[in-house]
Image (cartoon, rainbow, N blue to C red; front, side, top):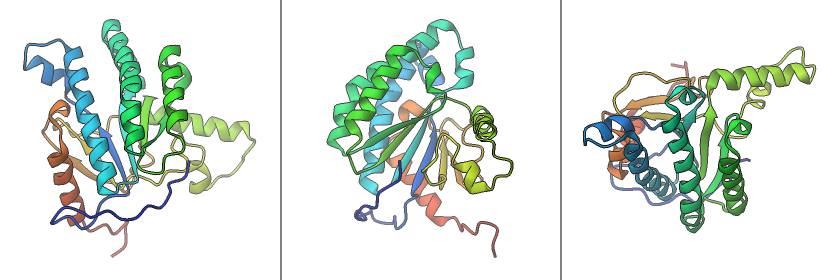
Length: 241
């Protein structure tokens, strides 16, 4: 799925440049819930509003692609009750939010070992992707059952299956789950943690990284703008002088 060119929107005062592709690690749901004496599931559900606002803001600001780290391969190691609640919440959110995404001209795709998701989630995901496929705005990419090391292994195995004996960077990238997307310009992580957590390891080689102490359920448009303002101050030389 290639990105399509769109007219540049008017930007807020002080913001002159936005990243083409934003990757986001949505962290802090459990701590947000614990601070309020609530179960972890409450934090995950509160995070849906942050997703909604972030997607809307990215679309309005002219971002072309947004990749959200929605469920990692390591997340299966969490307690079974929490995993079941996350899957239920994902299915519920897809069913609830697709009409809003459609209204905002958002396209949808998913990256990861999707065959490992529960049938109900996969069917809801496929239905949402199909409904939004003709939109021309922001491309929302959900990283689901995603792990970057697994992605790299799967790409290597795909090449071996094809009988490829030598490959360049472009050829390798074309076998990744994110094939057709530009590499992220900006990686945002919430909750203050200083790690990338097995997320887009190949793709973020030259991404600018912005870490905010804000917990994901509290993340709003103003925090996204803060990240974008910091991004435009960065001198992106890609190894050149």
